[in-house]
Length: 339
Image (cartoon, rainbow, N blue to C red; front, top):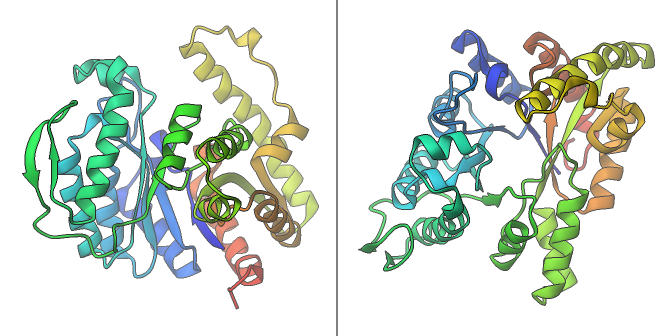
């Protein structure tokens, strides 16, 4: 079972870069397997100081020994896939093979507009770009005579260290994106909000439609990754105090993003605590967290978990590190293959 970190995105990354990097150097020492970062380019809102997850990954990989770094996600329609393949191959090589690559279509129309990319082309750019990227990273000579990118046969000068290529994941919630991932036997980066139930249903439907047998689907699930907020404490009282303070903050954030969609604050329902805990959280004492993780993995067949200890920036880095430390000392050793 692989246990990663996530949640450091947008305003959650603001601050002294040395302190920010030190947080993940500590995560490396604590025994977490990886950390994931997002891409927000030419964004009209506060996107944080690290718009390029690959540049951020390069800095972290140079400062850590075993921690993997992943992109969740690279917005593929914004990139020429050959140039992106070169960057990925170089970073994988110089990191000793510790790079993971999540790919997606993206959800920010402002970035497409500012880069003069037709929003109607993102499906084609995403699927065509993924094929080119994967073939290039495999070391194949790649040519494209149609679509957004047209070029004669090209081959990477230096292949990545991981073979046949660094792990490639697809992040998508639509039936079309999930079906594309299944067709190419690519694992999913499942979302936190909304929870992954709908994506897993799309995956199962696509597998049936494409004739993927149960064993192949199980293998695909095992390589996929899901996310959960983690609220951990030494006692039930400590956990409850953390949650009681979180719900108003979570509601305020939902009101903020609803306003961007033109929804009035009065029309945003309050947090459904029971449902949110059941669908989006690992919470409780270390023993309770361990039991919930085991049940979650057994119920979904997923083999990788992205733990969000900072509530996507609603909890401080100091709070997150304290929780990460307790989790590393009390939960990680109890998980399969960890001592």
